[in-house]
Image (tube, rainbow, N blue to C red; front, side, top):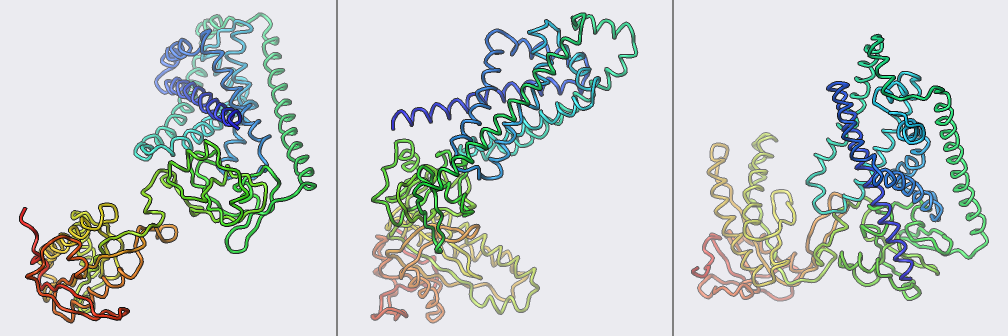
Length: 565
């Protein structure tokens, strides 16, 4: 097992290193092409710098080895797959990787190849005449090859870097760079071709350039050599593709005779796979949407599933899988679908929606997965806002509400709370999710006081539009609640459920009956550690509770007896 892990790590590292070397070569090559927008002289000057960097006894072999290694690893990966079904972005990468040799062999052989074999000086004039002067087909193939290899490289780097926490900050700049550079390179190449077509009418200039190229007396030998290399590469490409398809066909026929394993999903869905296939393979075979940001390479963790049945029959997670699961704080029974290859039938539930994003692969607080915590819950609601909205235009209502939410949201967040949701003209906020019960209760009380100040400021701002000042009621309670990230797709948020939530909501409603701005429970008062001995106390019957509960009533939330600082 350890040798297998080491082998996988080496393959992954080789793919990354070879890809980065090729991408660095390509970036400098395109930058050189872009100089054609300035002049042919600038283009040729840039070429000398480019060749000094890459065409030397050390780096030139490394480039060729990197190119062959990168393509070979793609072929190996395809041969090892249990199915050719894959996400669209991955299919594009694979197809482009396989097509690169056929599209680029003519350019590679016609520049560095003829230089090394025939000592031809492959100046930019030579390269441009070879591609645009001899045949438009050569030029189109070159541009197609550029687009293919650039797209393949950009996709590869994107799907590697997007698992890095800081990538989102630089993505817009990198995106612009990835569009502008190839466009400038193609434009520079075309501009140079047009300049050369004009200069070719000058016999002295033309003869001088041909002399620099050091062409052999029989140019047909060079042409035949390049053409033969191209034909051999195309033939090898077709043979390799045929071998890949044949291997998968034979594997499919052979697997039909073997014992099949059933992977069961929620809603009664099930997929049969052969031994050695992963749960992610099963999802792809069955057309079941399954998150996999990294494409099933065991890096992002977004494909993770909870094993409901059959866990006892599974081999333990290996070192690499365990490392990724520990990184995201995965609980018992959670495995990576791309690494889990069951030998018996199992039942699983995907942990993340198919639309999971890279951020879901980073370590997140454990409570997001669902825990029971002692927290404080605050509910707030505007009074008589329905009457206000009936006499105003929709625009005015939306404007007033957004101002209210902005003022109150700032008061909650500045006090250390978490805004759970806005419900109509109401607010629900959580306190102490991470800081603990006592600190959470204190933060909730400070938030209530700050909200009272914010309401006065809002009334002052809207006084010309209000017939009477806005009023609000606030209810706060503390206790045990189930906290976690809940919802669907874009409607996912950190929230809490439980009796404590319902009670806090009922306390907010009770402020109407008591003509008060704030009501807090005795439980919260005690947990806060503040002294409420001199604050009005009453007993209240809360729906759903068999016995009355003690509360503290405040006509003004700013009357909370905060300790002297």
